[in-house]
Image 1: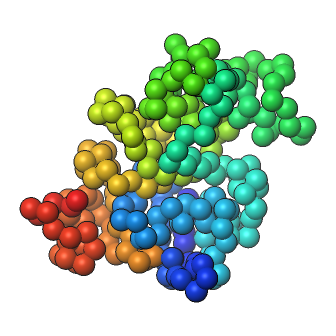
Image 2: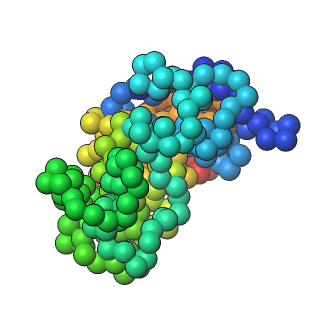
Length: 247
C-alpha cells in the first residue's frame, strides 16, 4: 500500500526526515513510535500532502507517487488523516458531521442536502462501527473527548479511505476509551491500511502487531513490540532504559 524510498524533508536547513525508507503493507495496522523530533508527525504531514519532501518517492497503492499530489487529490485517492486534537463543530450533531464529510464527493460543495439511500447507509454504518449510533443526534459539544475522537474517525470512514493516518488517537482518553479505540483499530484493519503514531507505550504494547521505531528521521528498528523492546540499540541509543522496558 505504501513504499517510501529515500524521503528527505527539512525546514530552514534542519533535516526532519533523512533518507527515510519504509514499507507498509495492504491491510496492515502499523504503529510509529518515538519521542518528539523523531519525524512521526512530519511523516504523516508528508503522506497527507501538507508538506512536500525535497527528495525521494512515496508510492501509494502500487503506482501513485503522492509526493506530487495536492492534499484534496490525496483525499479523493483514499488517504484520510486524523490529527491529534479533535476538530469538530460543537453545534452540529454527529449525523450532521458525517453529512458534511460526505460532501467532498459532490461536484458542488454543500453542507446539507438530500441524501441518497446509499449515503444514509454509509453514515449509519460508520456510526455503528465507532459506537456512536445512540449519539447520532447529539451535538459534538456534548460528547466526551473520546467520543469526539471516534466521531472524527467516522468522518473519515464515510469517505471510504484505503489508508488511514492517525496521529496519537488515544491522547487524553480514559482507560476504557483507550481500550475501545484499540479494539476499533483492529476492527478497521484488514479492510483498510492504518498508520498510527503514538506515545502511549502501554497502548502500543496492548494493540500493536508491528512497530516501526523512528530516530532522527530514519527507521531505527521494525518488528513486534517485544522485538523492539529487546533491541539493544533502541534501548541504549533511542528510547533509553527504564527497568528494561520502553518508556
